Amino acid sequence: MVKLVVATTVDPASICPAKELLAKPGWQPGPTLDEGIRSFSNGDVRLLEHDKGIVEEDDLDQRWENATGQTVDEVIFLSKHTAVSNRPALTIHPIGVPHLKEGDVPPQGGKPGWAAPPNPRMGPWMILLNKIAESHNLIPEFEITFEATHHGPVTTKPTMFIEIGSTEEYWKRPDAAQVVALLVWEGLGLGGGPPVGNWSSTSANNKVLLGIGGGHYVPRHTDVIKKDGCWVGQLLSGYSLPMEDPGPSKGKVNAHDIAGTWKHSIRAAYDATKAGFPGGEILAHLDQKSFKSWQKNAIIEFLGAQNIKIGKPGDFQKS
Image (cartoon, rainbow, N blue to C red; front, side):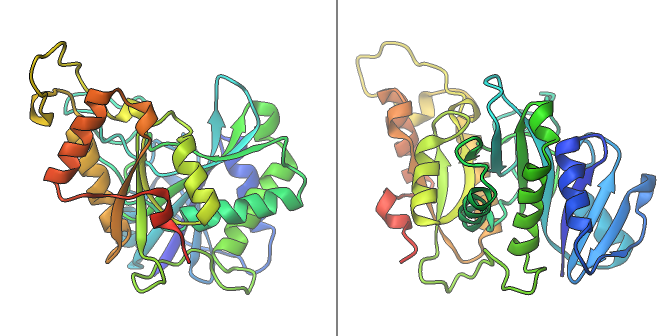
């Protein structure tokens, strides 16, 4: 079983942390994949380096398995982050575009209706990222946060993105690159310590947070995760839950009556999270204040019909 770390030369926030990682001991050149994708190996980690946009190379997990015969158990992408605010940030997030319907063209890779299994390391690595960023004096200058599920590329193995934002000045910052490289180095146990965030369904608390609702930086979900270091699944923001307003109604509005791809989005995110956390108890965590009452009622009704339990913040504590 090998772990893929993927970087691209066309993005300084991707290749700079990759170079920092490769400067550490133990790396050896590995095979070259199709289209000139270079690889380097260190223990059970394989760092892949390509020359396209980070969301443009689909199925790298399958392609690696086909080329080498080595089974991939997770994928970690290094990338830049952009934001209207231009605020410096270090972010982690799952990927997918489960709200898009067939025929839609995903603006940043992926395929309509799809969500990748989330990488179980996301929650524990958020705690570790905070610690490393603080030790490198990046806090409070940099915001350390989750982002909601978005974009590609297509993968089938547990996946996450680690990003540096939000302008070219910060994408090229050596200290930010060092923090991301150290996160991967320590998090995967390459430095000799134990890996951080290995999933086991027999852990003290096997409850997994499936975030539903909120803005792009999913603040209410992030608060719970940072406080308790809990397991994190897919994180659906409001824009991944398109719901058509049923308009004024004298009677009760049923979930069945509310059009939009929101139901498929929730189901795809739940199924992907279940695949990423075998044996885990997946609990939906709702950002209730982000919904209108008819939206909240419909979502709660749909979750009940799908036998998806709803969790409160205290349910996710790793005590």
